[in-house]
Image (spheres, rainbow over the protein chains, first blue to last red):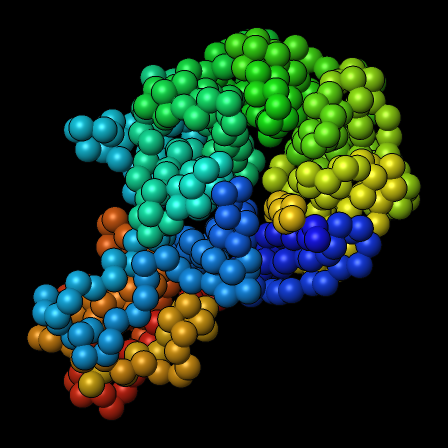
Length: 400
Length: 98
């Protein structure tokens, strides 16, 4: 029997919403990690019961949580408490747990790292890289112990031991364009990680505000892939880096085709990011944050138009998902079940996801605390919950 | 035995209620107390002090005998009342909204 698990990160905890394949009746579990910002929660494609969560706080920093039972219980990997009799003298007794599941330190080693360079600050001056938090966790497709983490200040980390320890894939931050990267309004974050299901050495990532990068050698070397992007808010609108890419998405059957919601503009590439073209078409606004692809129709994509870069709410106070069945350019408004009056919420970049059923389920969460589901590819929407804390991220697991 | 009061969120992470009691080898200072706390509760590493720099996180404060010792030298001796266990060492999050 098919089950659906929706993993929701909010500003004050994580929630797990569960249903059967009909996606009509839902149970709500949580809050987990109450009071903490949960930037992202994502399950392993190789083991759906293995789930990772990024738990953060301005006071107490970064915590990584891991569940091995589908989110019922959680642990900080490798951080088991020590017996009291060993605590006073670490040098004696058996090896202590290292407690390094939350240790994200930029690699400056001569062998693999680069000197800790600077990046551009808001005012154009140079600023050193400083770790703030994990924005996105992307478990590997084939190994539940391997996870990639996109962090602020922008860098890519990897664990190969189930999040007990992390190391930086330093070739990305060491790209010669690093000093030209700059923070967007949310900070200088690496927020998107796409793993190519047909080529295990190819990874796409996106950074606000640097742009999109691709590795073809498992993360050692990277190239910016931003040709065709035009951003009027930077001195050279056609620059190689500096674009505020909000999100990229891919259908697993067509990893050469990428879709992008940029700060402004919805874009498409059919050559693995080498070139991009605009497909905003007849959208009421081409500003927005999330973008996603229907699980069964690789040319059917979804965006949520937002009025502008400063007015982060839907145009005309009407919450509308827009769907294109032609891979862009021609869009239709999806409104049934969504508020069409006085609605001024936002939908953040990691707060939309799809399941893999047919018809495809589409899910998104709002800064007003609603999580909506459409069990028919976007035609009709229903709120699963209406009153959660502000939603930061939504992921979906389809469990058969 | 040193008594340490952790803030709510760190008690949750460490899975403890109320005060924790730890033994500290040598002089009782902020550093030696935090070393012992992190040794007993490795899940708290990085939450009070930065993992890499070992510096206090900016929104964490320390109190002893009703005195704010946040900005004292990390290796300065703490009052005898803390060292003897008569008074607790308080670790608090700054009141900064949220």
